[in-house]
Image (cartoon, rainbow, N blue to C red; front, side, top):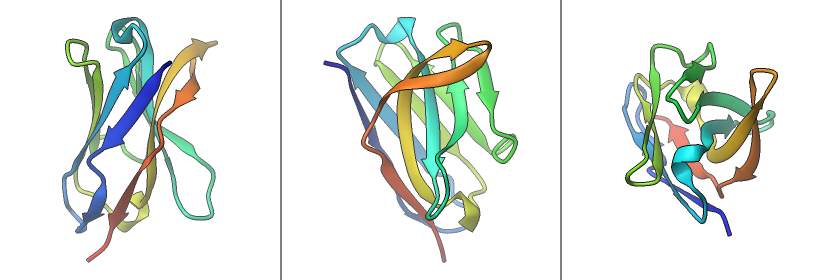
Amino acid sequence: QVQLVESGGGLVQPGGSPRLSCAASGMIFSANAMGWYRQAPGKERELVADIDRGGRITYADSVKGRFTISRDNAKNTVYLQMNSLKPEDTGVYYCSRGTYYRGTYSPNIWGQGTQVTVSS
């Protein structure tokens, strides 16, 4: 079965630059779009960034210029490089596999999530 396993979260100081990884198995990784979501306490899960199989990328306005999504098809892994972190970036970050409906990314498989806490 398809599995997505995130890693790289933890406690980070404001301004820090952690990188999240998501290792995929049980699917043809290169043929799939991937995305990162996050969910802050008391808020809905929101899309942070997605990348299609051709490498086209979309970012949420709140992370543009600070976060970078990338994929390594040889390693079946998608990454989220996060720079200049702010306390409002705190939340559980989820990796996903998805498709596009009318140009909008739509997830269909989720990872278990990894906590990122931005605090001094």
